[in-house]
Length: 295
Image (cartoon, rainbow, N blue to C red; front, side):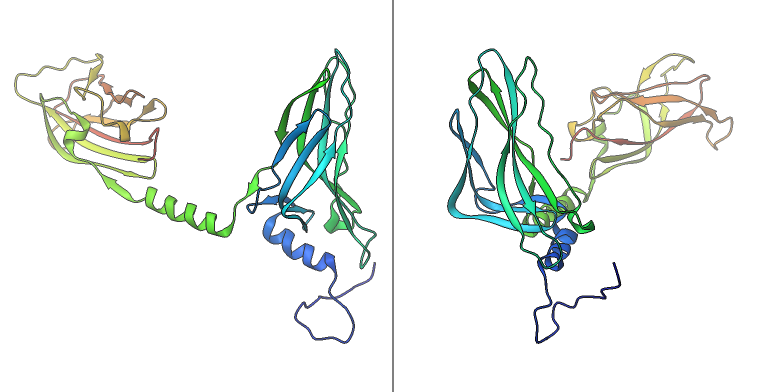
């Protein structure tokens, strides 16, 4: 093929120069290769009988080429009879066919019948890349599961492409969720026999940041190589991790002398534990973990 040059859709010309494949390339770059749009009944499937599946109105994209079943209309797809004691999978597809550049295109709703047997498998379909000069592309919409003489289920094989309005709303909702939310010492339920300093706890989305410096109050004895909880009860539900997470901790003196590494972790129930290899005057914790929920 030779150099065709850039097609300008807004140019004024005496003869037709904009083809379906020009628009399809634009749609594919925006909508993706294949999709069902979020409008109307979104090509909803309804079982009418053991021999008929009705596909309701909606917009479907196959290889960037857009077609629709108009509002209030539908496509009835004929399903062949099943066989007693055998299973079968049929596929309902949106089939796009083209003769090539500037040719006449066709979009149809087609049923492919699987092979009946003790186990069912999907029949093969054609998925040429239309942008790369392919001629046939089939977008699977539904799998019809047949056991014996009966249709037992119709599985939707596509996800609905969200509209820009939905995407904008989701982005706005996500923006709200990732706002920084601060928490108080009371939310962490720290043991009363510690003096608490350098405390902060905040959450960004599901990411929790926690920092605290603790020193045991007079009369409190901590032994080396024992497991202790710094929390008297579980931290607030918002901050509990999705999985057990180890966090940083060091033991040290008043002026950061005699530093030693301390094992510490927060579990999914919201309790924070530590074990020190040697007793120290201060224990300084810093942790980041992923919370089990957003709120």
